[in-house]
Length: 392
Image (cartoon, rainbow, N blue to C red; front, side, top):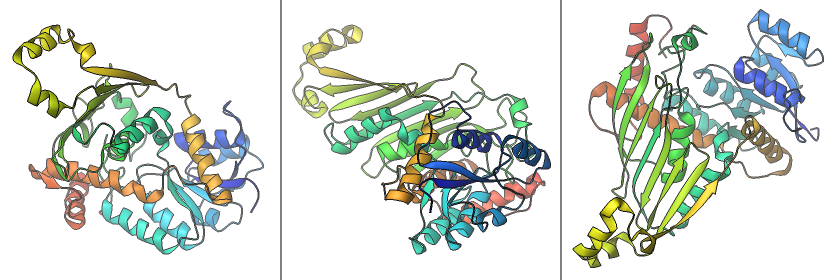
């Protein structure tokens, strides 16, 4: 193998084009010392023509299996519609090819679990997922604080992430977009997978899920684009997750309440960590009503005696997160560097998205993970009713 990992990009749409530019150094971002572009693949003749014009020295393939078996690449990135991620990944691993799966890992957990089982059976190849927001140092620090236990156990968590405004023209870009049979859903499988991953990566995996989803809310689509979720965790903590694609102003706010403090993240760039001087349990047991009145008067008097604060900020450069993941994956192949996002982690977000949709469809609380066969059966009902794509 060369000192640089040669990536094959399967699917040269918006994301595939972006990765190609990063790998060839034409995006204006910093050079990639361990990664380069080895080959491209797409079924669209117009994209082939454009790729041959932009990258005349880079092999182009119409069939992704030909790219995998070409000997021109050391790793593959699956920038294709979501249903194809597990299919391509399994083929790659069975043919000795390293694979970096784009998010989400898949649409339904049964296919993702089978992909993970294939990866476990082929430890000789590397398997990662493009959870680029795990590279955000702000979230890395927050995860470390929560995991350390210094603030005690989590009691409640809430994430409002409505900064995904998309007009109808966005959904009309491709025939597979915002469809059950082509994309597998809406905001949960397209815009929010990163937050579903980060939420569980930091706060843990919820055991119970209840959700209200609105399908085609203020948009000419049939999939979910307005979602409100209530969760329960094994330790009794609760949570909520709210997202939509019809809010042009948008909100991105994560709160994590713990025994000994609280973490508040605004816009994914600034976090305030509140550390209580006494645990909430101790405050509850010892504070007099006079002290409570002083504390709650304007919610500021006496606050200095109650907690200390720490501010964490992160100014991420657009595109750099994806470069970091690709470089990390390349160094994992070349040098054994630990993966920032192992591919097997992708099933957690798919499980949660499946549970949210199934709860909405059935109108009741469900366990997480849900019954894989039940979810797939209900999804196939949606695909069949849509009448545009074959069932799965």
